[in-house]
Length: 422
Ligand SMILES: *Cc1c(COP(=O)(O)O)cnc(C)c1O
Image 1: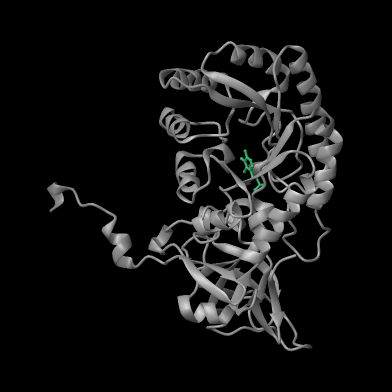
Image 2 (image 1 turned 180 degrees about the vertical axis):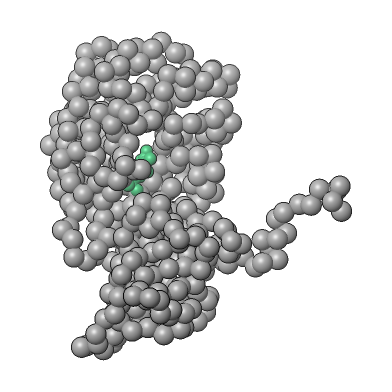
């Protein structure tokens, strides 16, 4: 459920016609809905109640500070995966005790910054990382709160590039070694072991892999407690999938996911954290683009848009499907035609969809890519010296540009010419 709906035949973002935003900021652009973001956060928050819990938004899915601030105001914590994300979370006023730091390659300077600024916990992914974090904390006279990310060896049954919970993936410590690693951690003076962390992948469309993983976490909690560790917090990761098409079967609801969490780990008396990204931001955003040309090919027609793979890379990177809808709804009874929908970048990979049924469109017409709020703007680049596209946030009947489109001059000015070329 989102707030991008047709009214009288034109697409609205909440109470603002999408065409009005296009006229103000130009195309292409990202557009987010405050009401959708807030609703998705609330669904998770309510799904975990009455367990003591914190919903940490995986800000790698969308790290615009206006988005972070919208969610933080509702009580969200943040899951960060880099020093830059940590700095963004702090910049919008998220207190350190609501920030968890994930990722396989944290550097000394990232650890130092988070320890100095305050951190809820580091999700530690390897023994070498554990030792470096211990040394950094000791050098600062601190103890770093840690959960150890275990790899439960569960098949998330999702796209290979976003599965993280199988033993062949780079993430976490094999569950078979967990007790030994916790014993090592407990012996390090700079670490305070607070819990267990797990994250098995992204865009999961079934609950069963979560169930398998969380049962293993519950067993491990009991084993570790028997070993004398105080396990008081469980970070259960993110990964719940969203519907990318209107037609396919609906992924599980946050409420069902919450029930599963209560069923598998609810009896342990732990505080529970989850780290949803996509389910909060994905369907809260669209990317709006204009048709440049309609090109008739041999046996294949192309819609050439002003948006491209550098703006939204998911189709070329993950073979991802996005519904692409006209901003002006076709009249009933209009026959669709089939198009390959492509961008202007000089790569065959710059293809959003093949043989997609679309109503007749002409140059200048607007289309919206649905479900583009997660892993969209954050993965964009300036390939082909195409400026990063603006981001717009809608709330009710008003909207604001939350990241402007840079000018060519601004882009060019970022390069430095060395003195020997002057
Ligand atoms: C990517 C990631 C998430 C968020 O995944 P979603 O599928 O967007 O919910 C959460 N935790 C960790 C550790 C991640 O790497």
